[in-house]
Length: 222
Ligand SMILES: *Cc1c(COP(=O)(O)O)cnc(C)c1O
Image (cartoon, rainbow, N blue to C red; front, side, top):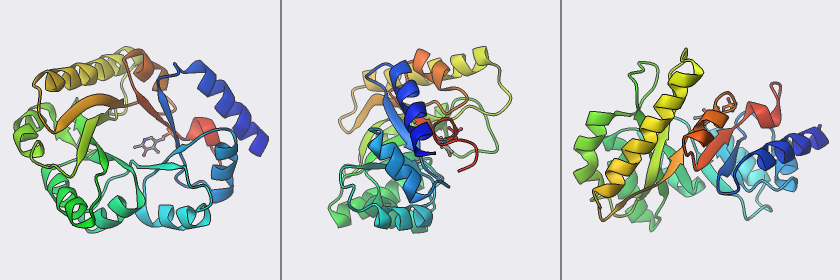
């Protein structure tokens, strides 16, 4: 099993432009599989539940150069743990959460790397800013100096065809460019966290800088 994780990682890594950061989404994956991915060269791991991540992180403490990415919906009452356990939070999806993270980061002397989650198309099943909401909140976000806001994260709604998904990812890149051109003092927009197992090639085509891959690396049955 570990050699097949190794093979899949090698194949996918070599198919990606070297500048694209490959985040192995290890939710539901046991610590041993994370070790296999680490042995194959992966240093970025994504988790979507704080508690599940904590026990694996404890088991993997010896792998001290892992960068942990939180990618799940984050509740306010888990915000402190998210800051303590993760280097990146890709799924900051509303202003209240951003404010809370900023306060906690300031108290903890931390400066987490942040992506703002946007819904390029309406999607009742997901959280995140709509484009107009995000643009309206930028002046406030720009005041959150303990956060290192680095870019945008997006997930397409279910049911789109490839062209529609590509358009959506392109729109996300354009939105990041528009915001970057506004020259905020505390908002950077260099990172585009987009692309999962089913659509990462489209995301890369549209300029993704980070892809979040689970199933295609670890298999359907973890
Ligand atoms: C689970 C998950 C992924 C990985 O999905 P796969 O389809 O297994 O590659 C990526 N991003 C987020 C936010 C996820 O929850």
